[in-house]
Length: 141
Image 1 (tube, one colour):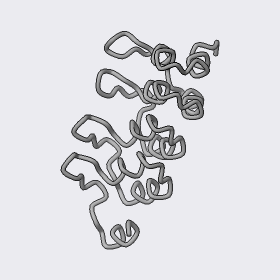
Image 2 (cartoon, rainbow, N blue to C red):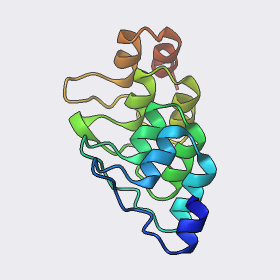
Image 3 (cartoon, one colour):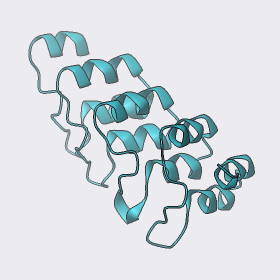
Image 4 (tube, one colour):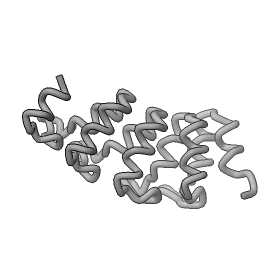
């Protein structure tokens, strides 16, 4: 269905009533091929929904590393600040997505950054009871 709509020149960034774009929905659900197709069709990577989440935030927070990588390759700053000064690394760490945290670190995410409460990604992982992720974030580089 998405391919047919994109072929008919549907707007790949048209949001629903909640501000969710097709790219956000695809990233949230881990549909990497659809993420790629939407990006190729010109979907905006900077669009935010009504709770200020972007496709990159949804991908990182749900542990969809491949989707997140495609969105980052489309021009998203790996250390960009989102609502409450959070980062993609913080979103991935807070939900215990070790593979996503590893990928973000390898791509240059800064584990020392703090949100508006003064918490790092490691703090968030530890508080959410993900000690392996917290340890990964505090290990010497």
